[in-house]
Length: 368
Image (cartoon, rainbow, N blue to C red; front, side, top):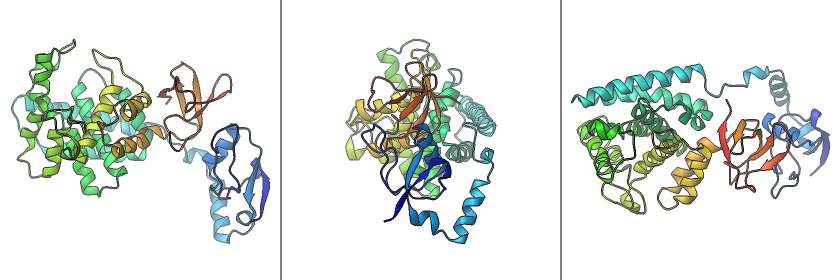
């Protein structure tokens, strides 16, 4: 295989890297046979690499069609590639969805029936928009407010449940069902005594026993709807069950807990732990994901957890972040096995730190 060293500034999109590239790291920052992309060039610049080994045939033997395509890419305005982390369009969709859901919630408190079709129409535009703008998933907790928390939480769980289903390659109809079920998992809270539900202090054991009934109430409110499949109704009933039997309402475990309920469970606990509550400050999305995967190991379906990690943790190169130390930086390299702990170049010093090696530091938040 013929190869040559090319100056970074002369590197062409589509070229193939000839060798693994290491820079004082245990694993390559770029793997052999990787195709050159704009993100890859950003990584090379971040590590001050000036010459790159590439396979000769990929530089000189391109077809006319490939050359034309590369030239077109080269002349594209950088602005066309950049997307706002969270666009105004998503902001408005989210705000409208929270308001609409909360109106429905008030009606359920008064004894009105659940309109599943209306709820489905509330959540699906948000799922579709979030999948286009994936950094939304690491910022959802920033939208959540203590006021109307039940609406914020339900909307977020619906979005995340639908997105996980999509990552699991479920068909479109099942994704819609999953998002709608996630949205409706906590509708039974409308039947919980407001004095307990809205309590501004830690719940007593008696209070918590009452709150735990919301899964039963949720199921009762939708059990006769023909618009929701039986397995989704079960998922709503079971979304607080855990694989190790530590959940409720029946303490089901392992194969008795459906994967659909586990999708809602993971979405539910992730958003709850990352959101500010009266009795608890919000936690870092990245720290919470580590806790779910490591400290809570055995409670949740690991494939479902990993799909959520892919949604939240895999940050694009050059994403600006705030670290738990208070320092700011940008992502310069992602580890395949630990996307939540990338290599970060600090803004002030230019120093590169590897969060996979420095476990005491973690990403606090994405800077939008």
